[in-house]
Image (cartoon, rainbow, N blue to C red; front, side, top):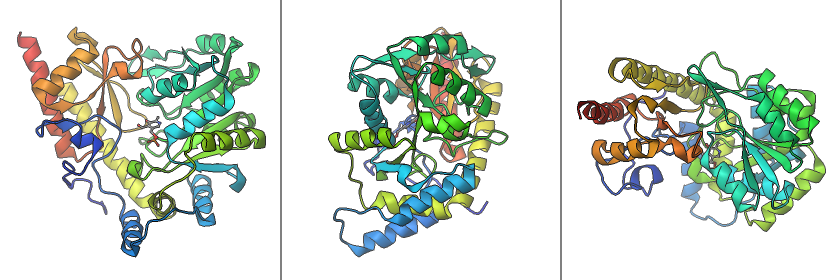
Length: 391
Ligand SMILES: Cc1ncc(COP(=O)(O)O)c(C=O)c1O
């Protein structure tokens, strides 16, 4: 490997949410979706150069920024975006909130597939709308869509928007083209618009293929808004830059208006240049990252098979967030998560964050860290669970 993902950079004490949230310095964090890897050298270089300039006034987003976004999606994913379809803002969650504000009236229903990323719930509620859950159906070590239930919920005239997570956090699914088309057919039939959060789109395991929702079929583009950012895959979440891609000029105008009303139209000077570096020069680094993450996943699977066979690791097609079925322990997700933190000093996410019902019985483990660190975290988990069995 050209890049060193085994390097254990110390993050504690850097005002880092992942490492500095827990007051106890012994805690090993495997929670929030943030990686312990240093960014690709091409990103570090442009940021260092920008810092050396020494002035950090309001930033302008240049044409080269749009070219980088267009070039990346066309080259890497075969999706052709036009320059004027792109709006930028300070994050995918702000983008999601603006899309809901622009497209839904308060009181309307927004469909989501649970268990799902926690901010889906808050974004819908914060905009005065109601959450409607199309619970994913557990089959073996993975999840499928319950299309009958999906259609029933789309048919409700109060349902006006479907918030898709593609790839899906925390279910680990990279939706197939056929699944995306099927969802779109149903949405089109019932006049439901689609907002697709594709922040995890570059984090895909070998053998799995990410399809942008908008590129899954001809009418997907017209009926959807895509939210994306290089922040998860290139580890630049703190630089706060994201894009909204929307072909429909009137919908775009409404979203643009919401971006201004929510005051999230300004970005900092670092986000856009980091995005350009990532999309123009970061491909080789990203490919190696995905290989490393896959090896971590295999190592985790082996660890669970040998040491914690009573727990089921769900199949990971995309993201670096492993979803683990803990139901055999007879403990609640919140109960186990608390025990792991207090007794094992390892910080994972409780499944209930992603849906009180749909996420109960699961925990989410972030494996985007040097392998030795991940294995240390897994040892801590095994120690706590080992003690449970003896009681
Ligand atoms: C599906 C999904 N969307 C959005 C975000 C956060 O996006 P941002 O930090 O750009 O607001 C996350 C972070 O974990 C996520 O998993």
